[in-house]
Length: 349
Image 1 (tube, rainbow, N blue to C red):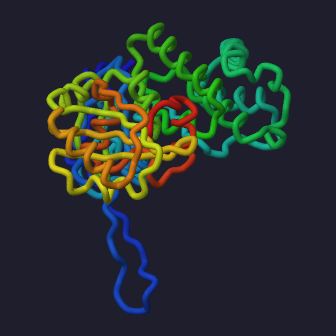
Image 2 (tube, rainbow, N blue to C red):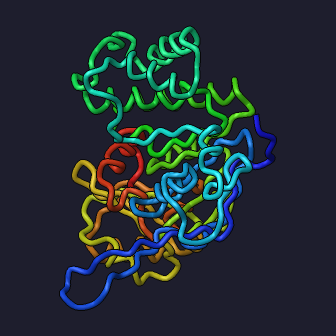
C-alpha cells in the first residue's frame, strides 16, 4: 500500500467546457464546471461534497478518478498525480455512480461481479465470498443468478454498489450512490458505509450527494460546492455554528400566496424557503435575530395569512446551505427533493 498522508489533494483545480452555440454566428462559448478548487481529504475520512445539480460535483469526481482531465491546476489521489500517472491512481480506487448502467446484460449478477473482481486480481475464493456477503447486505442474494437485463433500475444500482466495495479499495468515490433507491434500501446502504469505515479505519470515502440528511448523517467533513466553487468546508457541526448568531424559525400558515415576494422587503430576513404541504404553507426563515420575527408576523397578517404554528429551532446543515447557495438543495433536481422529503417529511425544502 502506498504511504501518503492525504487521500486527495487539489490545487487550483479547474475544468472548462467549450459548448457550441446554437446561433449561426459566434464561436463556441465556455462553461466553467470547476473554478480553482482547493481541497484536502484526509486518510480514513468520509468526506462529503454537497451541492445542487450542476454544481461541479461529478466533474470533480471524474477528474479524481482519471476519467476526465483538468483544464488547469493539479490533483493527487493516494499521493499520485492523476494526470501524470492515471494507471497508478486506479490501483488505489474504485467508484460507484448513481443511475449508471453497467455490466453485461447476458451475464448474471454473480457472473458480472466475479468478472469485475478478476480485473482487479482478486482470487476466485475471496471474490465469491465477498460477492455473497455484499449481495446479502443489499438484498440481492436471491437475484445472484438473474441476468442483468432482467433487473430493475434500483436493482442495478444495488449491484453497482456491491461492485464498488468488492475490491476493498483504499479510496472509494461514491457519486450519488443512493440516487433513485427506495428509502429502506438507502438506509441500509448508509448503515453499511458507516460499518465498513469503522471496520477499515485506513480507508477513505469521498461522497457526493443531493441529500442533506445523507451528508449530515455520514460525513466527517462536508464541502459545499456551487457553480464550480467551494463555498465552505468544515464538519457538519462546524458549518452549523456559523449560523448560531442568527435565529431560525419554522412557520405553518393556512394561506400565503407568493411568500418570497411578501417577505423579501422585511427588515432582518436573511433567507426564506417555503413548501406547500397538505393545504398549508410551511416557511423556513433565517433571521438576523429574534427581533425580526415581529415584522415577519405583521407582514403575514397583512397578506391575510393565518398562522397555524411557530417553532424556533437550532440551525441545520440545510440552513447553512440555504445561506451560502441562496436556494434550497432540491432546486433543479425533483428526484432529489422528493427522496429528501420522504426521508424527512417534517421540513420544507
